[in-house]
Length: 281
Image 1: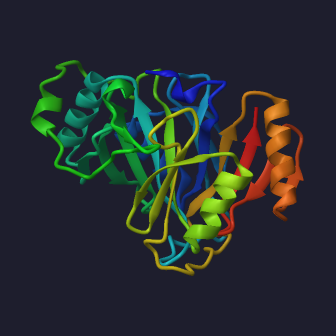
Image 2 (image 1 turned 90 degrees about the vertical axis):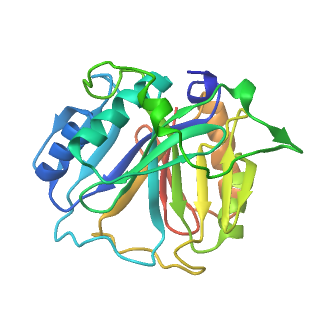
Image 3 (image 1 turned 90 degrees about the horizontal axis):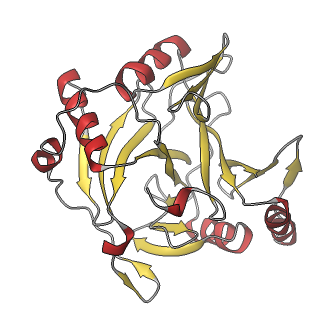
């Protein structure tokens, strides 16, 4: 993989979601997605691909309720695999398990889509080399075309053994209630750049990636925030290269009138639609 998910690039680190039944969800993420348990308690499980670094955390809130319709929050989180061969192994595994899935060729990447037992969206994808991406006037060309599933399956005959150690959180895609306010927050506050537009959606990144974050109003303009105990996104992290870079962003957020709260080793903020973000280094 290239440099888009390592410092000094600013990128999404890990994601925490809420689920209805922790044990059931852990089993799904182990057996279907291929993650390993790093830590587990009665209401929380930290999952990893490499056995060391948290990639996805599952939380079971008290009095949890199912995913609410027409709300802001998680559309999907996206796990990036190192190679097309890795995607081949994963696709064959999904086919063998009979899992329902969607698929798309986005020019910059090849992607598989599925939901967890609670309806939290998941993308698993591989990038084409950035030398093959097409940029025009600062925007990268992306589309949704039919995936060459047979070509991917022919890439590898290796046995599925879970996610490869090199898998990372490639990006996150969020529902928001006001697209312009969200775009302003991520660009003027968090220093991301707009790299693509799609109907009712904006794609943002740093370092010339096709997108680390996407936002959309596909749940309807003005979509409300979900209840705190609802299935869905709890928070996600954005990783900055050092304290100075993070401090500069914190100051920009404050100047925009955004709430920023300092914790022990991170700053907590929320986008205008209530999607919580931890700013880490």
